[in-house]
Length: 330
Image (cartoon, rainbow, N blue to C red):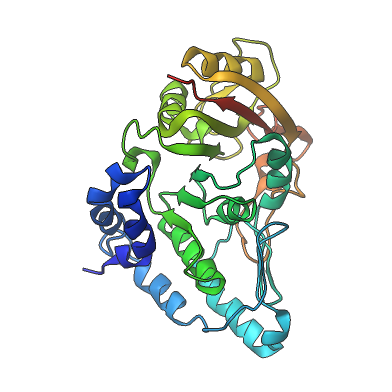
């Protein structure tokens, strides 16, 4: 069996003397279980993709204003096209954008726009231990590192997203204290109470029990730690919640879309302190769209062609909102 945990050796070595020391005992076993070739038939081709990536010193890195790796002058047009063809083996690229030696990976989401909406409202990440739940390929993890985090751990159950992260880290350098683990929140140890900041962005509406998810988030935070929650909401008063009958925006796994006041009430109810709405933005086809790097359907086809204020099912079109709260001091 492939020992996938080797990719995480620096994290595993760090854990015993960290606030997450209780996680050290079985994390390697967990990683190998989640990345068994028997589970993912395409995994050998993803491994081959990583093996074909060139070894090249980037010389320049930027994670604070973007995720840009490598001086474009180090790669001629032919090698850049070859790199593009290699990375296309990990299609679809949903979160980004990334720039590698002048190659622009134009992803489905302009995740940098979301980060620009979130960053002004959160406590400084300087020297903080950060968890990003449902992080996809780790775009925001790199931005968190660029904002000064001491260590960033992302989790996402999609193995292809994890391999996309490996591809980016291959060029950025293995020395950076940022990792994306092939886990859902279910694989996290219970009641860790260890992270300074926990991000849950684009996850809550996929959970059958939003209250349980909020409790899990609270129990991952140290006393006084900060939760950054980004999710879909509806316009409405306290107590209003949309429970889609079937799909929402062609997504089959959307369970609860609360109003902002309803979600604040939920956060208060499970003991989070000072929950507040800091940003509310309608999703546009400029922020989420099909590209050469994500050629499947995207937001434009999820909306009513006659009325862009509605989804194809007739529900209100997506509104994304950012909420901040703190864990109590107990």
